[in-house]
Image 1: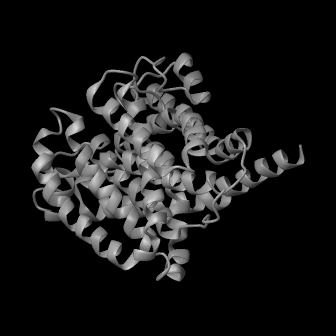
Image 2: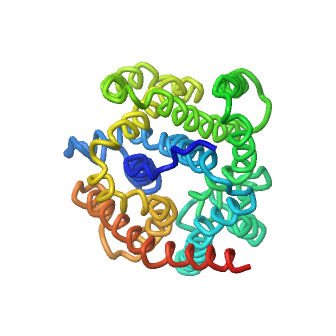
Amino acid sequence: MMNHQKYFYFIDVLRWIAAMGILIHHYIAYFPIKISDVENSKILSFVVDNSIIGSYGVWFFWSVSGFVFANILINSKTTLFEFSIKRFARLYPLHFLTLIIITILEFYSLSKFGNFQKQGDVYDLYHFILHLFFISEWGLQNGSSFNSAIWSVSIEIPVYFAFFYLIRFFYKNILIYVFVFLIVFKLLLHTDLFHYVLKSCFFYFLFGAFVYFFCLKFEKYNKFFIILSIIGLLSWPIFYNLEKLDYLKNLENLIPTTLILFGSAISFSFFIEKYYTKLGKKLSFLGNSSYAIYLTHLPIQVLILILFNMDFFEIQLFFSLTSFISYLIIVNVISVITFYYFENPIRRKINLIHKKY
């Protein structure tokens, strides 16, 4: 195995950025807001008009995960079973907690108002069980349900296994890896083989790993690639605006845009690590809270909607920039607390139990 494994603090911060994009996107999607309601606020109008960018968050998260897992898998002797236990310890406890919370909240809403707050979702025992076993997006469902944000993690589960063996098999020969990457890219664009979302997840995992190998290969040219990454980040809005109109016509049209954005962001974070390690360490709490942001924000939104329906506040509250910023801060604070006082302690206990037995 290689000996390059290290903790990339700025790469970790990218997970927080991805989670924030999703958080902002869902603020607009699930709260009763439209562009005409926020015309008096230029900032909020811009957010509403461009909230679709937040949907990049899941793809970005997958890319960053591909980078991180490639770093772990090629530099350790972790078995698939050990890898699975660590993933379970990291993902499942908070998933279970938020599933229970949103179930209580939604059925309280049903008893109080005669409807669920997340309209269109399916709330029954069958879909609860699908969520309970992390298989809510395996094609067995009849629609979105419960803490629907977990859909992307559910898709990741089968990808973990394929990714694990591909990385272990191909890491010695980067050219073979690139070849596999291109095949997946072709499958994603030009065939109906496999479910689109599953292909997308696998594709972005592979892309993240490809960026990792690329960064390692050209690590000594870090200053040059910092500049190149900055150019990529600055040019991204141009490509986005050119393709924005085609978004609803064909999701694949945004793939080149995401590759420019994600590749530049990940590369930039990798190459500046050696210069700003201390700053990265100070910001690491942001990355730690990213999973909690992802899983707690929908239960929080449901609670807010319940309070709104109980006349605790007027609808105009949703149109306020102050309320929007306050919401982002509240979710982040709750997520940081959740990580340090719930997620991390339970994760450590599960891993300790595994080591003992």
